[in-house]
Length: 140
Image (tube, rainbow, N blue to C red; front, side):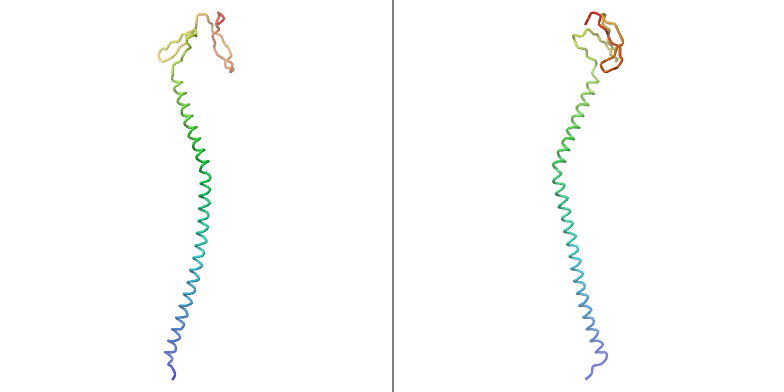
């Protein structure tokens, strides 16, 4: 007995559908394996890069701490020196007690009184600056 054309076509369609499904599943598995291998390789490379960067940071950290400590130390010393110099510059002019010089202040200004045994002269300081100096006539 012969089968009808419809039955044969139907059987052929089922066979082709099963073939297509098998091929599709096989291709999807291959694609999945390739994507998985590619992602795995990329993740391994990223992990290696992270490990290298972490090692580099850890090896440089003691040097960075040392530099940071020196920087803070220099900043503190310079601030202390600046504060001292500002304080020192705001102090009134001090004369050593055994010097025969008299000073006074008037209207916020400091003045130096010339001693009786001195005469003003033009002179050059050791740094090369021209200045008015006091020549002590009694040999002092």
